[in-house]
Image 1 (cartoon, rainbow, N blue to C red):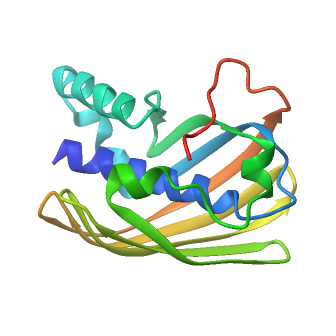
Image 2: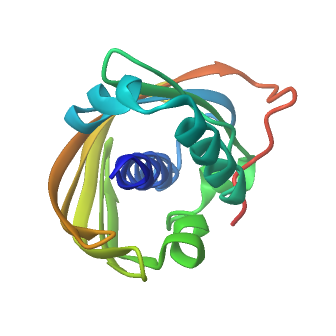
Length: 176
């Protein structure tokens, strides 16, 4: 079940990050993305040996383990100019998680994307939506209803992001 919690957290992070890229006025560069979820409160209960396995799982998806505390996961994300300019979300989660995005829209400072997951570990559907407060800040939510490793999941996560710098430093852009 601990692996299930983490996989769901990754999905929330991917869709929060993906949805932010749908807005054409987003600033490229280094962003801090925070995902808050009831499931993340359970992470401190994960034994150290299982946590090492979860860190390895994150690396499989091309991510460093986010900082997780107080029910929130915080990570750094590099958004390239091409990602900030595109009309559709990046496709990392599509191949890695068995999820596809559809109905991606943005109007003014609001964005929304629906997704469906049919992978071996994750089956169900959900959405990500939110608002750009400025070119350097967004807030939103993801929702998912389905099954994670055979366990029923009906969860929401709050997502927020803030631009930190025009340089991504050592943080690599998400693969598209």
